[in-house]
Picture 1 (tube, rainbow, N blue to C red):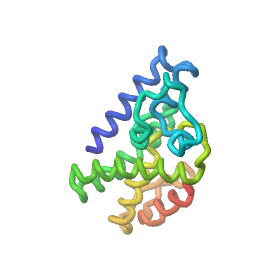
Picture 2: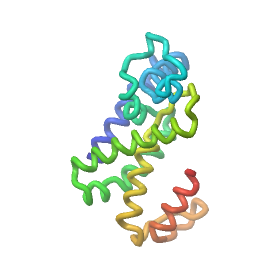
Picture 3: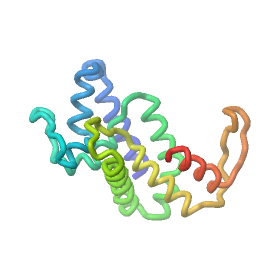
Picture 4: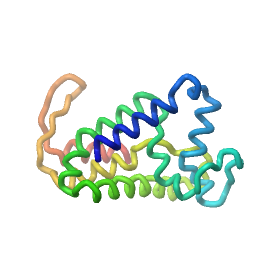
Length: 171
């Protein structure tokens, strides 16, 4: 499932990042059509009819398959690749897929609570990936993870320190 999620994210990114679509106007249309817009969900604003291609509730998940640029998708998919398979092994394939999608929806919901009037579309798998990282931390807090301190020095630290620091940084 982890590999399939990565593949779907990459394929969607490649489709939406093609030269025909990558101009700002068309990319913006895609982000508004399939991204999560809190003001729309909270009935503060409406999308133009030509951009309302999905039921609003579907955007709680669809946003998580869109990414703004290469570094955006690379970061999300790297964390999913590194930690997702261990969480998937612990949960089983189907439960893991449901968990991933629920984490994406929870990320959108939290964003809508934090900034309910925002008319900017939320995109990216960060909410889903953060859920997977959190699950990994709960399942394997003492497993040692290799990191590059200062970008150069390899150090092995317990997951609780590395991922706890990452979570603090995200907050």
